[in-house]
Image (cartoon, rainbow, N blue to C red; front, top):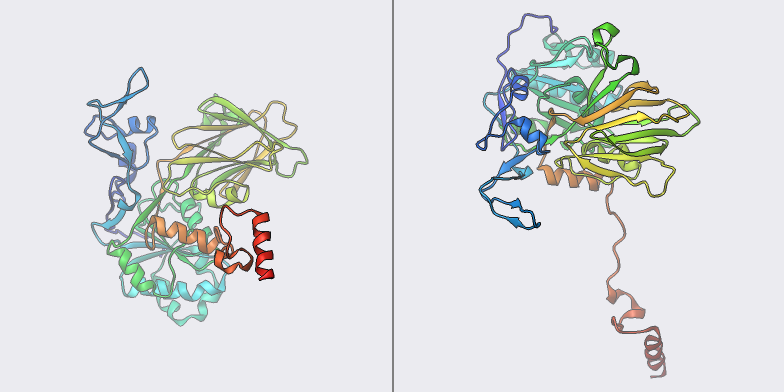
Length: 440
């Protein structure tokens, strides 16, 4: 079966308890684009303009700043960051369509893939979508169970078939790359993603496959927390396209959403990158080095952390800018608010062009006069937690990155030469004590 089949599906609806809501699939994009007013009369666009686009909530306490710098109470309501733990997954109707993404070129994933797909079709009576390339894998033919369900699978091809409004739920089998691929497939609203750890590192894949039936059932019953992973909207404007209609040029500017990062580097050139960086139209610095990484909080634990950046929890509304091997010892990574627009362009005196890639894909050259604009997208990736937002993240830091792992310092009593010492002791007093003990 393929996407061309005349199959009408009544897809399940789900929301996330709390302030961030996931609407029915048929309404997500429409609702995201329509301005909504809250009790204070502010619309979504007003909220975004105030850089409060993610996880906002109201409180009864009111403050404002007066001219002399003090903070006084007023009748105006203000907004605070919502507790991430309140983002829960709830289905209004059971989901009927699921997209299964598996790691490619990995024999170890084949058996779990067949078990999962067979269970979803025969036990849960769900419509399962897989990539057409998966069906072409001859190694799957050795599984008798797969031959019985092969004709029941729906297939699609990346770049040719549109999955918008066709998928209720996504299950990934593999490593972090499978979650990045799911983000790549959905360039607007993304269904909830459940990622099983069957890859190498698995920082973004918190679920273990051993008891997958129980875990998937828990998710389908709504017993799960969500992490809304923000993405970056990246638009490349070519010099010959500026001020002219796209149709007249015969091609549209690159417009992509990335989950991890967008990277601008010197590519094969032997010269330094010389890149101008603008923040909301203001020139803030020039990057001289191998390049620059603009990442989401999710991407802060990927390429950015290897380049010396700090690690940011995915619920923090921010954008991280990290230089790659800068020719300046004082050029440290910076974190800017999620609501700003970053512009990256070659400096006029740059000796060479630069190259840009988006989550490791779509490499292209940036020449003089071209520019890259980066903002936070309104379409996050709803990642389902195995436990909760905090536990999952710190478990990944400990297990995947061995964060803060070292031998524990010995207790003072275990050091024989300092057994009787105190914070007031000096080396001379310790020597005197040692000599007295020897004489006695």
